[in-house]
Image (cartoon, rainbow, N blue to C red; front, top):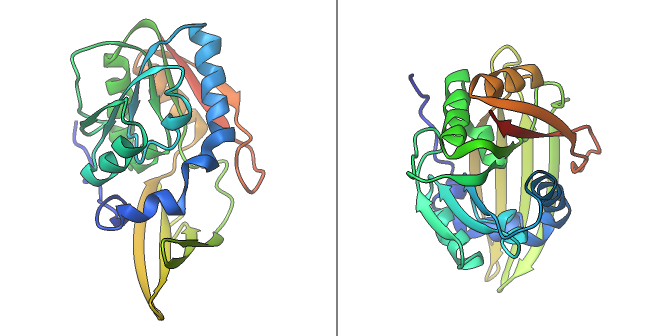
Length: 249
């Protein structure tokens, strides 16, 4: 199965130090409650072992680790460094969610928005197989992309400004779909960084996948799961969202 070449955006490389500022862990409290509720609903009480694929900076996971024993995988060394600082009790490993094999099973596998970087059908299917390989029958796989084709409505722009450690940083996020006929969209980040009376600008381009809900359901099912859609009303534009909670057959 051929895989696409995943770009390494600057936020996950030389600009990784900005990630905790651009999207801080405290912004994930509400969203993480849906993941916690899904885990508890399926697994019951207990300090269960879970695996997160594409952990990024560990911001979502930081709200789960008090109740679960976690292992985390990411393709970016720089993001793993951020995640290790935030969640030192978690085992962190470098790996690609399409190919990594840890040789052990977990009660649940999570794949948050990092799965949006799967750009093709083959990429997504490979990530789903990875999740299934790390679960026994009855294990739980929870995932969600940034957008499904049905929930991506139009070009959108957001921005924020923070002051941190002598820096004034303005974050501008621009999301668009240059070619509606393909399976990808683009997100452009602009960082205006003010320090010592000078301002510099950094730009970062992210290409992510865009597939229909039916495609997601079908491909997850092919990987060996029964799929349930759970309401996921966490988005700033108050648009619809669905968390995919999947049980391994």
